[in-house]
Length: 132
Ligand code: HEC
Ligand code: HEC
Ligand code: HEC
Ligand code: HEC
Image (cartoon, rainbow, N blue to C red; front, side, top):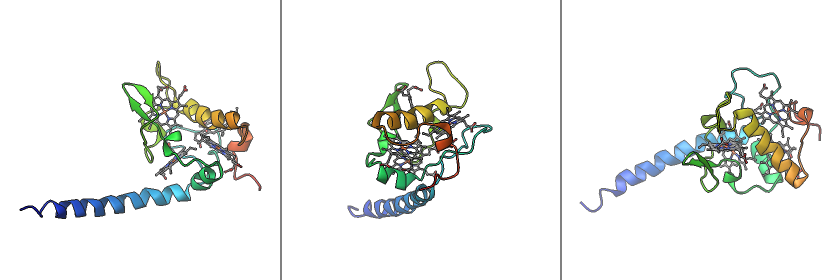
């Protein structure tokens, strides 16, 4: 009787491990920011080698970009890694909400400007990989 809960727990952990391994691969393979949240695009996708970028920029805290939501407000203590920004930021403007393009631009450029590192001009992000 006392032991039975261990089996479902072990199964759950196994399922979780398999589940987590899949998005981890796509995040490693990411070279540009996905554009799925936009109905149509006018620019090439923004260059963003997820893991390499975050290593170079020394961003260990996932919630620096993947924040959450609490009472309609931004929750910086939540970690929403793997959830597309477009789940919460729609391409269409809504009152009191940051639309998708602005959400990306503010987050990416905001930090680049703060740190005075990283691209801030259109062509440096919306282009095939910059030469190194
Ligand atoms: C720091 C990087 C960065 C810079 C600089 C930047 N963007 Fe973006 N932009 C993004 C990201 C990220 C997205 C969302 C996903 C994507 O396009 O890959 C985006 C999305 C867009 C979109 C909506 C999607 C589309 O293709 O229609 C437009 C339009 C756009 N940017 C135009 C601009 C213009 C114009 C400039 C210069 C004034 C600019 N961006 C500068 C990163 C950047
Ligand atoms: C500099 C900002 C930034 C940081 C820091 C960051 N990410 Fe991301 N991550 C992104 C962006 C942007 C996307 C694409 C979001 C979208 O599709 O709307 C993304 C997507 C992902 C995805 C989905 C991959 C896919 O192919 O669908 C996973 C998983 C992920 N991140 C995990 C993490 C984890 C784990 C950490 C911390 C170790 C982390 N991220 C830190 C910006 C960041
Ligand atoms: C779970 C929901 C959720 C997710 C996922 C999410 N956000 Fe947000 N974000 C919010 C809420 C809520 C706010 C505050 C209301 C608003 O501005 O829309 C906000 C605000 C913002 C702001 C405005 C902050 C300011 O100072 O004006 C930016 C920029 C932003 N998010 C970028 C992003 C990016 C980029 C991603 C994906 C990497 C992302 N968000 C993912 C919920 C979310
Ligand atoms: C919290 C800070 C922060 C955020 C958010 C951030 N960056 Fe950066 N980014 C940096 C720093 C710091 C560098 C410079 C790294 C270096 O070379 O030392 C950088 C460099 C870059 C570079 C140059 C090439 C490289 O990989 O080093 C690109 C392209 C870039 N960022 C794109 C983006 C895009 C697109 C986003 C939004 C999805 C984004 N960044 C969000 C801090 C940030």
